[in-house]
View 1 (cartoon, protein in one colour):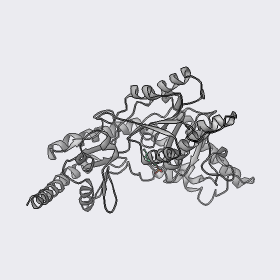
View 2: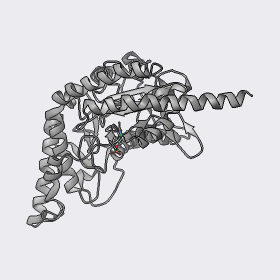
View 3: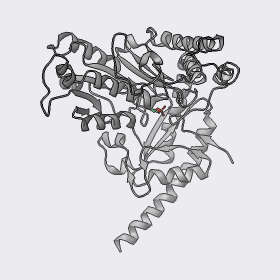
View 4: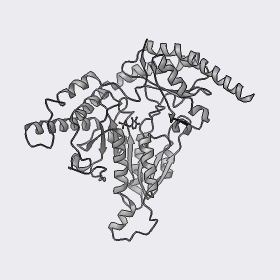
Length: 414
Ligand SMILES: *Cc1c(COP(=O)(O)O)cnc(C)c1O
């Protein structure tokens, strides 16, 4: 049976060129970068070289810190900054006694962030920080005016993703970066360095520019598993001069921000994957945009109820997200799996309850749109005949499921 993988936004296969670059670091060059001898020095050099490759792409100095992935980088960025610039702490440093219920600071984010961001912010709320979750419009785009209006003297951090993992919408990061910079310049003094701007670029790294000066970000997160690199490796850019609290304490690796023996093969692989992704992004974007728009056009002909989620143009070249109201997304995923088509739904399913996607919900459509959303994410090996196969099998799956849901409704009304 034909197998069609359309879940590249969940993870990508390792590029053979990345695999080759990593190869010798598993066994031949296995040294610990902290060791003083030749093998250690060679491993240290490999890590330094990888850092330089990434720095060049991000247009920054060596302020790149390696972690175990996107999730850890995001947690390090958010907790690291917010705990360092905790207003309660700032006051206590200058001798002011802390009173109970002391304001600790304000954070701005959005309703459509990845759970790595949202769950970290939930924890900070429990600690007494205040978080504003900005709304998005019907396409999932943040209104930059809302950012401007929400900034306050006690805002420590603004965390807004570069591109959304479910619906592919690209956020106006540059404009937000400018707004924050301008606010920082004019703000009444509490801590003149704040607010800092963090962006989760895990989905964007394969297709969009990552120049941190152009973007105006202070912290940026990328990972290997979404760009044909290895899983379990990520990086955090922290603008020079900004201090953070570590999450992990120990031997003081990665400038003390992230202790633990470096994942040398992973680090080498991440740098190689990012280098290739950025070299090939324009060509690959053009190719995938063509396939994406072909599928979006065709799907409307064969499944007339299908509605596109996310922005019609300003979206990642590889992302297609549709809702078919009345059809449970999970059911479609399971039926398509049986036909050899591997996709995702926006909604996370637990054993007892179907929790509709928080991203589709934030678009302001009904609940039936959130629980019926389907994500087809294209990638390196996707060709038009893969999409034609899906266009052939999907309508059958949909009609089967809509028949059984009509039957259920009929039984319920009797
Ligand atoms: C995958 C992803 C993450 C999490 O990265 P891991 O490496 O799996 O920890 C975070 N944010 C976005 C947007 C992602 O797509």
